[in-house]
Length: 161
Length: 110
Figure (tube, each protein chain N blue to C red):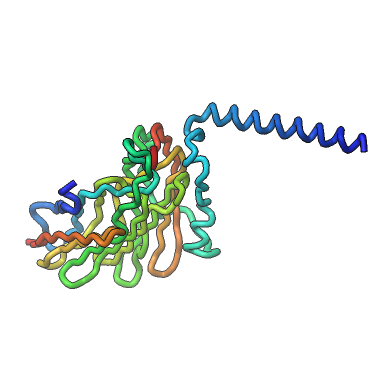
């Protein structure tokens, strides 16, 4: 019985310590203090990719992703995706996907191209909630997947606030 | 915000037949994520964003896009087009509140 009390007391102290640490950490990162931000759970990029592509292997290469190293304003981050894959009538880049991994919903956009585009390149401006990877996935008409990713440091998040 | 849905499409002034040209398009739209709070009331501003974009060259659907919440306010997009015929290029945008906007430019390759 005595042993049990000791253990639970130890457990209590451990738990209190953990909570204190958590509070301190939250204090260090002002973003976490906003209740709305802290409650909402971001979807993991792995789940997003799995939903879209199943277990298909995504290879690297053939995709060039041009993003800034530092984005001062997360609400407007310029992104350019270029692929050197062919754009002929029977073999072309069918879909270009853009993801921002730190967003609550990492999916940003899907662009469906045809050979009439002549060139697999898209430039757009996206919103990023925090510093994270931007990932571009290219799907060819034959079903092959290629990707490229780069980290963008975001000074001011661009989704809520 | 009376301008919501105003579209500007820019293509090169002179186009050679068969040339791959850049098409730059911008549409005025707030693109609300549903995560932003109204500064006065403190309530979340509901989602209001363009989720569907279609590009027609003549009668052919050449490009279609599905957008999520994370496309920036007043979306600005560049894509390419193989200008192999004289035909109108039509862009149509739809938002999640049923708004539909479109704009057409004529492509006249020399």
